[in-house]
Length: 249
Image 1: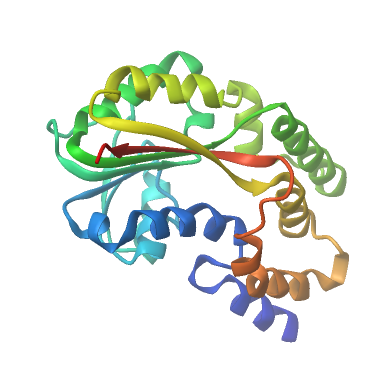
Image 2 (image 1 turned 180 degrees about the vertical axis):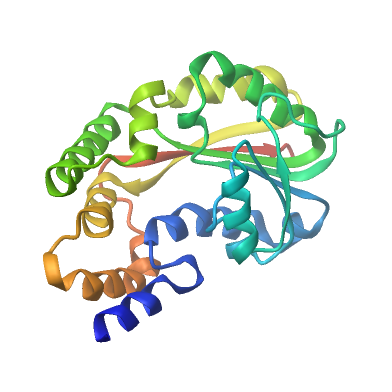
């Protein structure tokens, strides 16, 4: 009973899996309230712990899977739209902010250029576009470790990690070049790392692989408390890349 209550507390408001907060909090902080309230906000790749949950603003949420949108709507202020990122059903210049968090690693390589072009098309001239994804061989190795540990423990696979392996992680330089090719005149394109690999591996071994056994709920609660600190650590290679496409001053 105590373990269940502790886990429920750890998982409230999306921060029980600290990796979610570590994805979104830096985005919300850098964008600021002015950008997030200037006009319509679009998130591509909906999930139950998405941009609206952390930014506390209404969001138009797009996903190709209806069940993802259902989970997203249960926890956030969203307008759900079932659509393909490579063919968005919106007019040109419709959004002031366009965000896609950990989605491109689920998109076939042949479709990624079209997806970038669609994000640029639906964003207005002063919009901020933010894209994040795991990248690099070190991240591939880290994901393999978690997949193998999980399979050894449960005999099952982790769907989203299997998809990463199937389609291949995006290359950060290639992705940044795609945005520069389209928006270089009006926007600057910069990249930064997000979540050191050693923290990412530790978190998911706790979350997915039940480490360290019966103490898992306690460790999950500890992770929730440590999220503000973990999000500021930049030691070593990072698991994830954030691409910032921001209007030139």
